Image 1 (cartoon, rainbow, N blue to C red):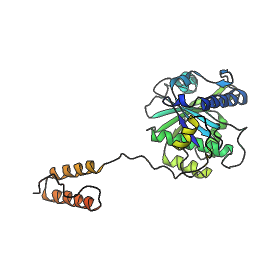
Image 2: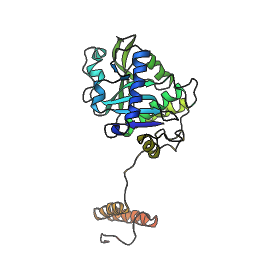
Image 3: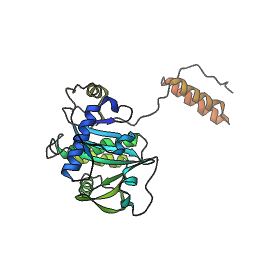
Length: 283
């Protein structure tokens, strides 16, 4: 399941954040050989102090098995301030509708092979799905991510291939780095879900999240609720009736007035607005 931790709630999940930083140390320093700073077994850099959002993937026992960090590109971020060589002299990407995704990793020691729910493949795709859905719901249109060739192949195999790249590939530790662009669209999300067989809502419900916040592992974290529909603004009966009255009052012709009255009658019959409360005078 996916849990979002940001600047507003991070003080409630210090244990999970410690697990995430420890996972990052094992992956980026120990496994990949990156030149990262590790203190007390935790990999933490200066960008973690900027209140980024973290998308965490948790297993059925409530342990962090996957994570990724999301940071705005309008301020300091890794592509602009650490991996600027990738840009080949071009200015860094900055947009209010673009996030930078970094520190994407999964726990290959705790997870199994294959494509089961507790596999590396499934956890990777679930994390991609959660990150993209969270970004899309937050008004983000694109993600730029600094990755290595291995992660680039993972994205392609998961039917989440970047739609473009920025700059060129540069050496980084034992491997190399590139900057890829991903669009936060339903089409991309649906492709990843189909590839991994992910159904229902990937995000942890409020009860399970509260249990983790209190330091108590929920009994079950693998239940899938129906996929959450896109959020729509709530419209009250009074708001709808006021709008109908405005249409009636501003009608410029007999035909427009009749159309407005017919609409109000239909809404009254459907019980969506109270009846017999027309504020406008009938002409």
